[in-house]
Amino acid sequence: MTSVTVAAVDLGASGGRVMAGQAGPEGVELHEVYRFPNDPVAVAGTLYWDILRLYAEVRHGLAAAARRFVLAGVGIDSWGVDFGLLDASGSLLGNPVHYRDARTMGVPPRVHAAVPAADLYALTGIQQLPFNTIYQLAATPMLPHAATLLLIPDLLAYWLTGVAGAEITNASTTSLLDVRAQAWAAGLIEAWVLRSRSSRSPPTTRRQPWRPCPPRARISPTFPRGPGRWPGWSSTRRC
Image 1 (cartoon, helix red, strand yellow):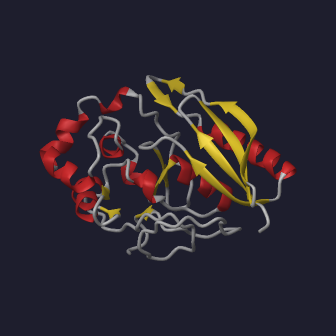
Image 2 (cartoon, rainbow, N blue to C red):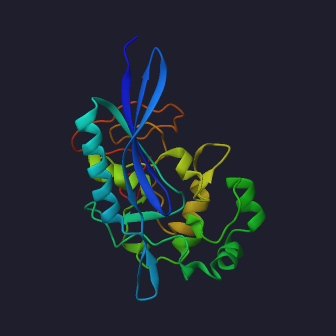
């Protein structure tokens, strides 16, 4: 058995790092390749993630890892709930807002008036915190202009690969995932988030060309190179 080296991008609320993991006959060896701060930015009363800076740091870290190792694949992990919105051309509609921003104060009762809290919990199975994605979307003026929603690691992966999608474990933090079906909660999304929109595509753990597919529990060690589409939540294609 020959050794295989993969890179992991680990993003936290205050900092990030790029690790290289070598798996071989003797076990797994970890190497910290690059570390960087993650400082939010407050503008006009709103707290944002500096997502372009994070993207630049991720690229620096992966480049450093590639200089030291032959990489078989890359994975990206971050906190949940926060997201970026893309327009129909794939351009970002503003910086992602920080989950600690106050914009969702008073929003959960408004959501629960349409979707009772007990029903929401029975469907999604996660604690109803005011920063969950469903409440953030209710406080997002740009939502009507968006074609695609990408959570933070999926957004970075999209910029790195040209492939957009939704990874299922991170999708579970949104309060929009049906915990039993392991798929987007279609009725919830249509009734509350998308209103008149009915197009979405299922979350997956495997990067692949744009096409409908069931959620997957297997993580591919590699990802496609070059432009393409990976099933995300999009208003431009029906599953």
